[in-house]
Image (cartoon, rainbow, N blue to C red; front, top):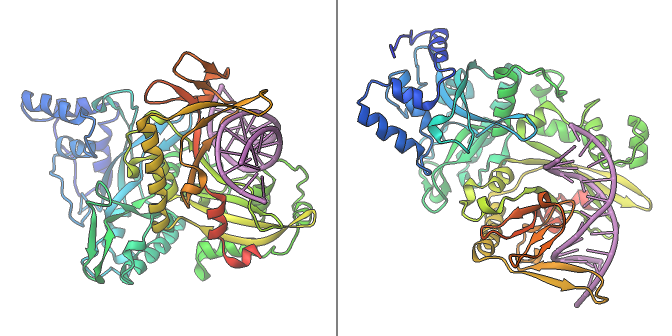
Length: 490
DNA sequence: GCATGATCATGC
DNA sequence: GCATGATCATGC
């Protein structure tokens, strides 16, 4: 490959990058100006199961011809362009999503924070990126992944406003010596994600602001949900399907996005479900009713989704509190694949990624007579401390799966029915999470040849080959109730 | 009254 | 067809 581009010109860099479209990483290595032996070695190395985050390096080194640097400047300083090689995936239902969050730069605990976002090194790095998207298909070796899209991307002004607010929120924790309280779910589009293999190895003193307190190593990133939006809107150029909550960026001059959405809901405090239904012209008592009410209060007219919420991974969750102050439902997560779960690291698990980066907008209704009255709303995400508790529960459940779960038939007293009991920790064993079935029918293959249930799709294979009904992690209803602001519970 | 396994039912 | 919000049934 003849390396030929103008490193001062973003468009020239992009044009040169576009030569990659249609290639795989094997092709990139094949074109490199290195010995045959080294090429062989490189392919082998990249395809090893544990190989980390390096396919981007192949492109930097062999296609663009520069050595990687981890300095604070952009990769092409004269053009102000940062090169980002990042995966995307095609879901079961044909939707496109970002494969990962996009890491931008480390958060330093050793230097004073840069107070002005627009003058910060971070802004310099995220202002203009050359995104190179490859399709990740886990059934193929890594070097066979195809490079499909090359796109210059700058966050639009309305996003930059929110990114700035996110930045302020993150640096104010660092500045207060509270970096140990940072969490990716604290913010909207720009997150503070963990870095390093795990908490034991990657916790360091907050040298500049609180030497005595250690905090997890973290980096600024664009959240995965934000990158999914970028992929669909700017890379694939799909037509926008989500309504916005913000009318224009003016909305953010006076208050933060968080305050704005909570205020919009809270303006309706004290109204009954009946009254709200009438006000918004909703008449069906379907299971969508509660979230529909929330979106209408937010000013979203048609859908049960909003652009900002999709980008920020905010989920609207209606919470109904009974007259005895209990809450019926726990909050479910996508079902588990036991074979993956059994030997996964916590911070690489789907559950961790989901739980730590997700935010909920709780819209709380309290039962009064035969009606529900709106108490208000609260934007919530799990604290770092509680995430540790969840980790503890997760690991105990994982241990049961590794040991080989006990499954036992238990007949009811009259002998007419039976259930399959397991030895997962019970709900009360962990403050934050529990595990429970989530499928339309039960399905078990008990290993002795006995099959219970008809629909194999409702089951999930265990590492030892047996099958049990699909299970999900749930946030305990008692925990959620405990997290609500006092005035929402009264 | 709650825990736990099980299932319903809507909407994409 | 499937994910997921919602709810049920049994037993303590």
